[in-house]
Length: 458
Image (tube, rainbow, N blue to C red; front, side, top):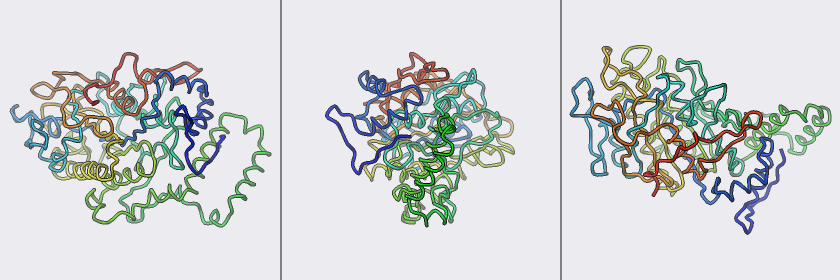
């Protein structure tokens, strides 16, 4: 891939930067060239004046709206469940007693209490819709928000535009894609996947550390080696697979050789008190690492709170094994989220990053209003709550409302597509943008006519 390097960003008189020209080269492989990129800016499809980042916390398993952020204390016992509501620092907003620290920061986030979808009540479909805005149909896999951002705005410096951690979502029962790749955009826009546990005392990022033999070689020897390979396989280099391989190799080598990129992953540099505040567990340390990556220039970080719903304590509270009991919201899952999410908001604000970093927390669906015979709640995509704050999003409010038992939207029904449109709008990307799909057929970023949630923008 064609690349130029400069010590400082270059900005032209019309507001375009050197990176905009360079990124056009990579877009041309997908049918979007420099002229079209100029057109996108002229039409307002991409707003380069908005350099907004995003941290997305994927709450795999599907949190119960009734036991977290949309409680119904006056409903019958089999509906309201075992937990009590507590007041927050915003008058009129209450959340579960399982989130005492989060209650002190309600001014920083909004609760969308009327999210729903009508697809099958399985984890995989929910993952697809909540991470891409679309249900995968007709063999089309839509791209994750972070991959779209990376495709359109490119990386900042030597760090990847989108990092996913600690691992991709695994088996959740449906054997379908989860929406965590670049989909039809191509593998070159897939996220950089950590594939490691940041809470491990021996945590490191092996793929970013050069092997011993490589550290002894000079960069020019690597270049000579590449030139030799290029000459011997010139025919292969003209293929699409070769261009993808070259782009992937270049990204990996850049990460390996970048001191800034390596340092961003060095959690050991954080004070022990800070690490404990987030929680010395996989999710807590992933959220801390997400903050470090945003500081280093990563545009989008996806943190999966869990990777499966089987034989692990998660939000998936069916009440009996291999799933989780409802008590885990009080004993483990609730405190784990409360500490990590609250610390992340505090940290971003203290470092003056919250104003340009959206923080999202969402599951793939809600849970049944009525507690089941096993003492838990089952899948319920008919209504649940999503948390959105930071960046241009207006906190301290509730958008939409559910009915008296938390079973259906009563006010301002909100689809996954509208959540997607809101995220893109916050990132400075027009929801009317179309991306090149298979056979050059343009595919809209979101379903035509889908608008952002206007109440969330100041």
